[in-house]
Image (cartoon, rainbow, N blue to C red; front, side, top):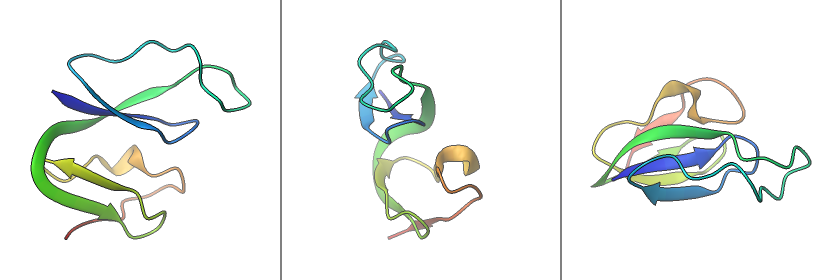
Length: 74
């Protein structure tokens, strides 16, 4: 199972594949999913936006809506 985060509304959904694009509450109207990595037991937090994820490894650098790489393992 992977963590998918919508780049438009920031919702995180654990799923076996990317969820559908419809129903995003953002002004763009469609989810834009980014695979944030495999669901795991380590907690990572973005030091810029505060988002937290339970992942096996550090989430990808493009995962922050504010740009850059800000993930830290807690």
